[in-house]
Image (cartoon, rainbow, N blue to C red; front, side, top):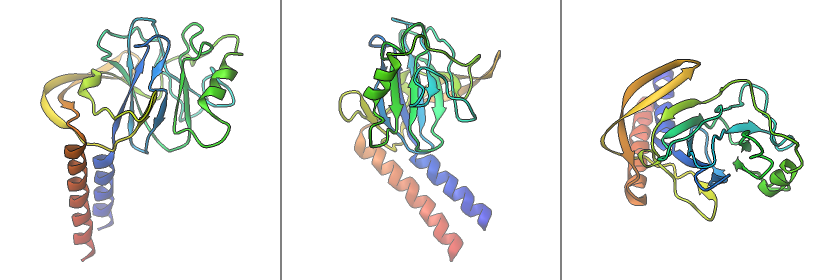
Length: 230
């Protein structure tokens, strides 16, 4: 019974998880949006563009801008050239709701303001304050090699992008998506290692259908839990 309950709870989390699109370098030396709200289980999809590249995404701390965070929860995409359609993507799953500060380690991009934050807390630790401190750093640094995420090939329009809520801000919509056709997703899990699997091409279909899908999915899970308790 406990095993079945755990399975149903995991299904509930999967139903409510969202993909959050973040464009890297599409509009110059920027992350767009640069302020994101995400829940545990959501996936951050960093889409790389070539115009001002190469670019990277590196996790840091507020206290040490433009310096990679050490430890198990860090991530680094490596320097990526990007593609015109933004399909070169680095995917990171949100593990908790603590603030996640990220920057680009290419050239002087971080010191010139190329940074973003996920789940910023109230108080003085703002993105503007991070950027001001970053401007004082002599040169950004990075980890020796890519880590902490998955390199994929998926165009922004193929993911379940969330809606923007203000300039430069995105909020997790906790939305499901609909399938329309098929595509290919290539996943790299280590140096020189890659696997390719068929992937349904997904598109956002508006708030009402997405909300309905989430409600129906959670209702099914709730029904399963109730059945276990009877």
